[in-house]
Length: 174
Ligand SMILES: [Zn+2]
Image (cartoon, rainbow, N blue to C red; front, side, top):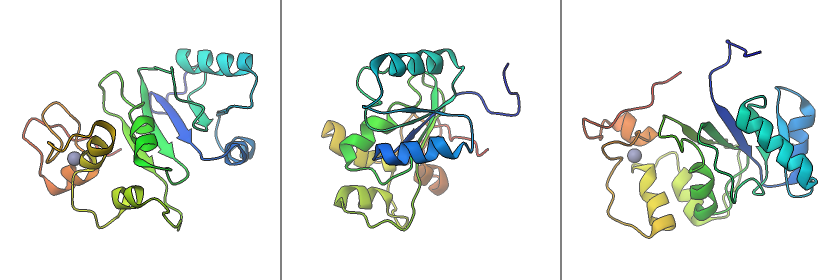
C-alpha cells in the first residue's frame, strides 16, 4: 500500500564502499534495499524490478548501480560519500529526473577532506557559479554554459541568485 505521508518518487543513495552500503541498510532507519557488485545477479535483478515498480523506494548503492540502469522517475540522488570525480558525479546525478520532472542531486558533507580538486571546487559552499557549468565541462567538454537555461530546472545557485532566464523554473523547496 502506498504511504501517502511520503513524497512520490524514487531515491538512490550513492556510497563509495559496500561497507557503507551495509551500514546504512542494516541500521534500518528507513525502508531501503542494498545494491552492490558482490550481490548475486538474481538478487540485484529482483531489487531493480521492485525498484522499477515502486515496491522499493530507496536503494542504497555503490557505483555498481549505474551502467544500463535507466529508470525514469528517480527523484533524488544522495551522495553519502564525497564523489570520486566529476565524471562519476555527473553520471550518477544524471540518473535523477530522466522523465524531465524536477529532481535533485545532493551531497552530504561530513567534514571530509576533498581529495579531488574538481569535486572540491564543485562542492565549495562559497561557489558563485552555476553548478551545471562544472558538470558540462567535465562530462561533455562543453564550456558554452553561463547558467541554468530555459527548460531546465535551476540549480541551487541559479535559484538563489535569481540568475535564471525567466522561463527557467526553480525547484520548489519542500
Ligand atoms: Zn545553475
